[in-house]
Image (tube, rainbow, N blue to C red; front, side):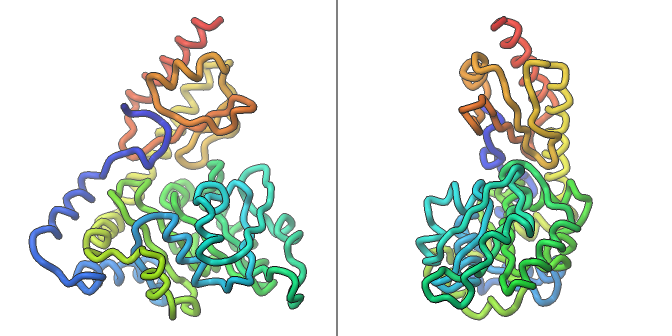
Length: 343
């Protein structure tokens, strides 16, 4: 059943599937020693800059864990929004593998600011206090919002001026770049991000994410950390080939622009339903709304989606690269019918 629960639920883009099939014809050296992985690594340097080093992994949690392990010591603390995936949805994996304390900040929109971070910038040099080491942000955020390029640069400058480093969880970085009309480098390397968790699964890949080290100072032990964290794929070419297709001929942007457009279309179609209150104008591929409680269960019987905040009947609807206009209009028609029948 197609629904609006998550872009994780979508299939694999045909061009990505074709790339997987193409590298399945012969034997190749394992663990990243193959030609496909070498080409993909060069491609990442073209995208992010010559200093960039990429390590392919299985999934987003693995990417975040490896990135944060490379950036910290166990006595450090990681500062993040309270809604951050590393805090809410990774079963404590970052704390377990890094040994670091997670310092979370309540935000109105999922975005950190220098003023919000300031509350945790104390205790430096005091051995009884976890030492703040990394600020982790998500782009786009778990609440569907975006950091502008100016906000990212201001945040990065603030973080570095206080002796910390900046990690970006880019599970939906393609949607963010497409929405802002920029490329990946402008939103990462050029604004001072130190390490990036680069996502593709939510935008047409079958599996696999990447850790991109933009600050060379954190690369030295990354290969050992990846192995210890059980994220070293033996048949690496099957991950690398997907990213090669993803980053070639703008496939990532085409997919992201489509899913973003589907979210904006859904929001526009819902404007005529006064009983549905949109939390904000969609900035990427997520629509957050407060809906009449009596329509939630019957709507979920036809379209799979998640509750975001049950206390106020807030739902989250995610669109994907394979969402169609017909599906959007059918979904809104069902909402209208349920609202009308409930009155």
